[in-house]
Image 1 (cartoon, rainbow, N blue to C red):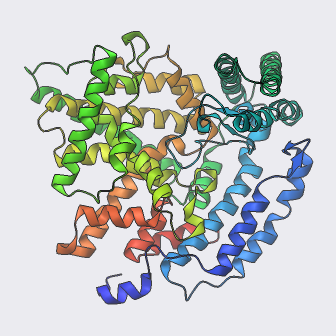
Image 2 (cartoon, rainbow, N blue to C red; image 1 turned 90 degrees about the vertical axis):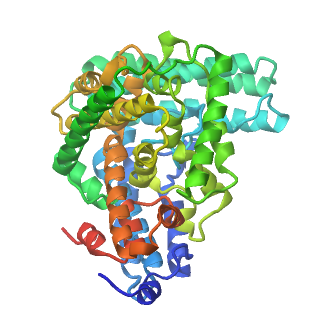
Image 3 (tube, rainbow, N blue to C red; image 1 turned 180 degrees about the vertical axis):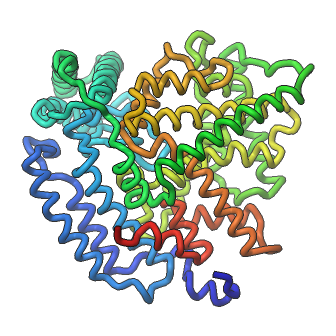
Length: 535
């Protein structure tokens, strides 16, 4: 479709337009339905309740199908597809993934850190306690609120014992590790709130006892869990197409990630050859130096973006990066990402595009209620993880590391690690690998031994990707789709194209699947028509 700019503008409408009132009302009602009813004060994930609720899904789909968006601008038609994808996500979760039945980690309640994505990565129960939002020391009001939330832990875990009838061995193993982590977090919270009132102390002790008992139960049940945890290629492809709106299959993703893994290793070897004779990257040696280097990296990166006019600049960008500088890690405890930040912080700061996304959602909320918050079921993954990963290589090619050639090597190591872990997750979902074999593959193909078996990051990543099909590959599949979109949009705009305009258009579309951003930005609907046609 190659149309004059004026005609294209009429078709597309406002890139950031509000949803139609009819669709906005249906969306609000759908979200109210998607949240499960309460049972003993906690979300009801029992089989009988899900059977009843799942039987209502055809009615919701019929209501959406009764809306005719044919005359709407593309931006509003995109909103229709977002709601359809969420309904498909509910279908997939109830019919296939069933985390409340197969995945003990679903019952994690206490979240101590903010995710860098619009919502938690992977299936999360509706009673999550966002501890990171509480300022310490707690006020009386905060104590009361936190105590009320902590009192949901015990009844939720009691319900979980009846719900968890699945036989997925690797998911059970992930769950044991995850809930042990909750015990550790609760112990830390207990130490942090030693001077609190009796109400909070009682609620906290109750949560600790319930979590410890639940972990012990999981451990007793573990030997009986002998089944596979992957969902199989057919289900994986259904989720890619109908929920995440990714125009690829399991086989396509394997081919793409194999290509990226080979490309990363080859590029790294030639970078090393070019840099032969240069001193190695300096490794940060103290907490003070780590902070100083981090601050300097933020300033340098922001100046680079501003001077090159690569993307639109906003006041929230530098503070968002500074807030993520992090802490110095001793060498013995440095995980993969700390290996990068202790050598050249900017190599990972480019990935922190995530925090600009979150700041934009907060500071510049989208006019459409469907795009204002996080889409359910991680439907945003191709855009959120894809852009963050694409920025690493985009900035390499733009010249960010021209004065520090050894840093370019780190970028290729980052790419190789993401390809290796994604391939491992693909093979695990096809039940060709166990989670241990996926982790071994992940370690073996990450350069320089930077992915270590003895640190928690490895288990966390492979566990997450087993819990959330398609997430482990979204970093590179999303990157690929965004690169294609840049290619198409630059050809469409010709001399009017700038990277700043492209980033602005992508950002204005919101954190939605790249296939829908493509439709909204270019007017080309071939991809989305293929994804949404009836099977």
